[in-house]
Length: 487
Image (cartoon, rainbow, N blue to C red):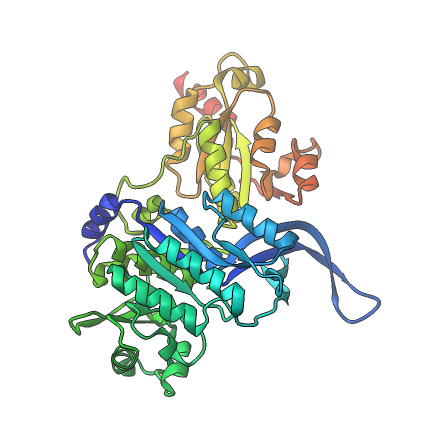
C-alpha cells in the first residue's frame, strides 16, 4: 500500500463513535528491584517501588481508540468494589463515560496484578469470577447495548471469556449492528466461533484460528484456505488472521486476499497487540476504508506497540511517523502545557520516561553519546534546557553562544530526543517535579556534587543513573580551541 495514500487517508479521518462491548479488566503493575532471596522460601523478594493501574481487556481497546481521537462508549461489568471504582476513574481520564458499566453483585471486578523487576515479569495474580451473565444482570447489559448502539458508527465485541459476551448478548449485538449497517468486529475467544456468526470480521491470531478450525496453519501457504473456511463457516463479510512476525493475512468481501508483512523493527512485548489491531481496523472501516487499507494501518500500529512494554497505544502523529512521511513528527519543543499533555499520554501508554538537562550550547560528540545513553534507559527522553539568563549566570557573560530557541531546535532534531522544554531557574528541580520521571540521568561528573532532583525521583519510585562521559569533549574546550585558532 503506498505510504502517501495511507497518510492522506489518515489525515482525512474524522472521529467516529465506536461502541465497545466486552470484558473490562483492571491491569495493576507492581514494580521494583530484586536484590535478595527470601529466607522463608527459595523465592525472590521484590522491593516494590511503584504501583500503577491501567485499562485492560476491552478497556485496552478503549485506550487505543481514544489515542486515535475516536469517540467511545463502553459496556461491560465491573464489581461494586474499590477496584471497580478505580476502573471507572481510569475510563474518565480517557474522556469516556463509565455509566455503561453494569455492576453485578455476584462478581468482583476482574483484576490482573503483575509483579515486575526491571523489564522482567516475575508473577501474575488474577482475581476474577468468570461466570456467564444471566438473569437481571444480562438484561441490564443488553438494555445498555441497545441504547448505545443507536449512535454508534462501529461495534467492537472484545471477548476475554470473563462472562460478558454470552450467546444471547452476542446474537443481539451482532443482529442490531447488521441492521444499522455498521462494521461489527470481534476479538474472539475459545474454539466455537459459531457464537460470532454474522459479524463483519474476526481477528484471531494463528493459534486461535487453528483451535477454531481444528487444523494446523503452520505453513503460510495454508493460511489463505483457513481464512476462507472461517469466512464461509461463520458467515463473515471478511476474514483476517494475525500471524505475529509474519504479519496479517486478509480476505476481503470480493474474495481477494493478501499477506501484509509485519512492520515491527524490534519486538519488546506483544501484550495488547491484538487490541491495537482491532481498534485500528474498526476506525478505518467506520470511515469507509477498503479492507486492504485498514489492514495496512492496523499492521503499522501493531508494529509500533510491540516495541513497548505492556499494553500500549498509538497516536495519529506516531502512525504518520511510522508510515515514513517526512515532516510528520509531532512538535518536540514544548511549553509547560504541551509537556504536561505529552507526559500524561506517555503515562497512560505505560511508557518509561527519562529526564536529563543541561545548557547544550554548542553540541558535540559527547552530547550525542550522553543523550543516546539517556534514551537507552527508557522509552522516551525529555530534555530540560537552561534559558539564556540562567546559562549566563552559570557560565559567564560570554555565554550562551547560541540562544535558547536555536539550542532547543537543534536538540529536537536528534532522533533520541522526544521532548525539549526550557527552564529559567538555576536548577531544573521544578521541571523534574513536573515530569516526575522514571529515570533521572546526569553525567558521572555529578557523582560528588549531588544530583538535583534525586530525592523527588526516588521518593516517587524512580531512580538516578549516572552516564559515562566522552573524554576530551566539552563546549568549553571547543570554544577555547576556536579562540586559539582565531589568534
